[in-house]
Length: 294
Ligand SMILES: Nc1ncnc2c1ncn2[C@@H]1O[C@H](COP(=O)(O)OP(=O)(O)OP(=O)(O)O)[C@@H](O)[C@H]1O
Image: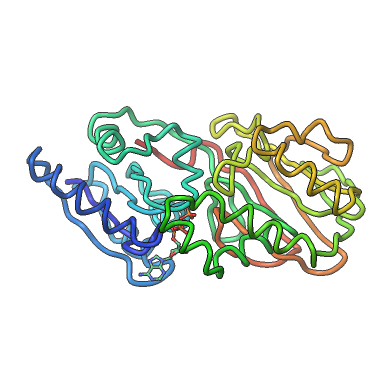
């Protein structure tokens, strides 16, 4: 049996549209399936927790990164593979794992693909598949999730642009903060920090390659710290991040590690997989091979 968890409102209604097409294909192919629709944030995790590995080939998330995040959190320690059919605005997880954006090809991969294990990040009781963003980045996610233009841009199929707009919106108000980092037991201090990205995959925000060398199965986070850089320099450097070229800027420090503790002069927002999680201080650890993917 294949179980589908659909977030109808992801991608401004794309979730439902994609599901209708997928359902037709499943019926044509005579695949044994069941579907559940999410009714609220985090509902997908509750649904996924209820599935038993004995009867389940895979649990397939139809939605964006937030839906994938919720389903994955429900599948941790279950030994049930997670499948993804992208239907969000950013779809960064699908992008990094080379999941086709086309629903037919993505379904084909779920039905015939090979299972593999990936690393995930852990923050308290929450698991993160893509990138944990701290500071400026968390604020951008907060503004973006609440924005009206995200809905409109999704509507005209330009959802990827909404993160860029939210970036500009936050840029003019945000105050950089001094940060103490502890990476694998080593203390580091950074001043005037805009953001820290703790990455399991290279991209977030709809394709921004903030940690271009991050790899989801190397047992390590790639960490990007943007610090001691003026607002205007940040604005000039930002477009380069779409190609991962920002890493050559002197105000960008890249490190790798398994355990990252972040404390700041004042509490700043922490987002994971585009969902607002908490504020600093925060502790993020890598869990090697912790999730089965198909
Ligand atoms: N029925 C629902 N009502 C309100 N929110 C929901 C519902 N179902 C799921 N959610 C929440 O909707 C949020 C957004 O979902 P998701 O991230 O999948 O779509 P998106 O924001 O369009 O895509 P992306 O994250 O790729 O940009 C998630 O936080 C999820 O928990």
